[in-house]
Image (cartoon, rainbow over all chains, first blue to last red; front, side, top):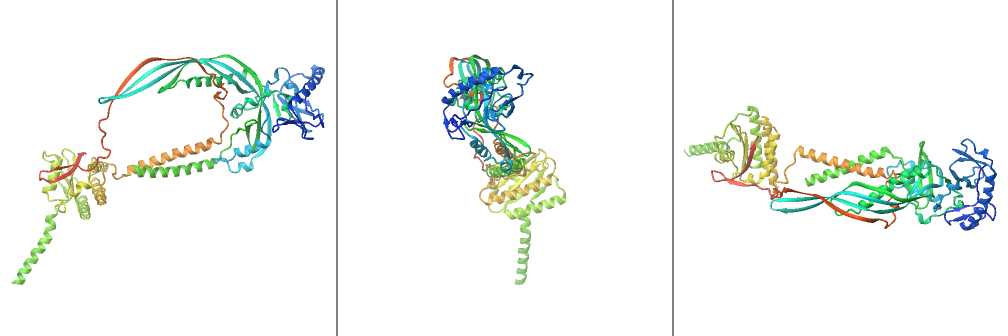
Length: 357
Length: 268
């Protein structure tokens, strides 16, 4: 048995969902709007109910890796069976199209600490894709017309957020130059120093994508998210969107966070070494004094298109609108531009050289 | 009687007319060292004569086995002055001397040719002579090339701006260098240009840093010291007065006859 949550409109019992424009829950059927606070109260009531249901669940239902990979849920609206990934936390019922949230995925240790709600809707994502294709001269001309938009998904992607207080002790080898002239000679004095820097530095909420389904480079490319919009997690935000729960755990993600934090720490300290002709880092240590890890859901629009049998994935930051995605290159156009540019630049340069030399 | 005198006078005038050019025009090619075949010599002399007439400057080529101890400069100047070369009142012309004993080449200029052939121009001609095969025994080719260049130099001098430092004529090698540099540079620019266009297609990249998440103002330096390891002093000779840049023109000297000559030479 599953625990599956659907938000019913207290007014007309239709399935309601989160509206990114008004930042509240809205019923698409009767148009009623509900604040998150009022729904939170309702959520708690529902949650208790659900927990009781969960207690009744026979243990035998969860045997032999059934919880791994795929899982089966029942839609509370139409009783249709929803087969979904075990990491799916919110989706739409394929039968009645009602947005559903698998509440069980968020119980216990899996509960996110915070969520940044979607600010941009599906239309904005599709418009951003069109804009993304503009002004790219090497993009095959037919791509814009021929590529087929397979799906546009609004997904709450699980992120591990690392707060870190760092301590660093670093050494640099630097040189200073002094030049002067006396008699028939020019003199250059090179002074070589060891420069030491030590101190502390803090990072807030360095994100690492906790979903193995999401390509890490794609998720890092749409950073940063603005934490000021983050709110306490409520399952109600997920209605109408897809949501994943993490399947890369905290410890696995730590490595990536460390890498980025370490590099930034080194750079921040290197920036304080100024006034030298050359600066070469010579070593030292960067240590974590203390850190906390949080779990949050960030809004991401994912767009999939196919063109000539090849899949292209685009991602848009659902909060800031930053849009990324690699595009195919027209090799013919590339060589035409290369030849054209070489001919023009070559002719101009040769002409200039003939005039000047 | 009268008729006879007139006849005699006419004959005298005619012989004088016929003999004068022969007397006034000593041979423009004197191949004492015997470097050219007869046919080569005849063709070259014809060419020198044509160019000399066209540009009103005697272009003379002299090869000798030895200068008898005289410097190439003095020898070439004297050969020009006492050989009766030079056109017009200022004895316009130039002479290329090849001394096979010391393997010297020397160009002596006189009159208008002094300005037409500047020091830099003569240095350039020397290089062309060697490039055309003077050192390898290709004398005919070198001399023919020299004659052609002389024509070009004199033509340029008529415009009032003779070839000089910074304005020397371009050789095929110069053109090849310019073309190679221009096309190579063009290709490099094109690669940079299309590279930036290509880069626009790639927007998915890993982030190497976490600088976006640095807490503002959280950097606290506990200490910041420097420690001198060592000092090194190197010195380089100041390049005393920079050569050329501007410069140009022709330097002159007086020959033994008292005339002013320009010129220059070198080994081959």
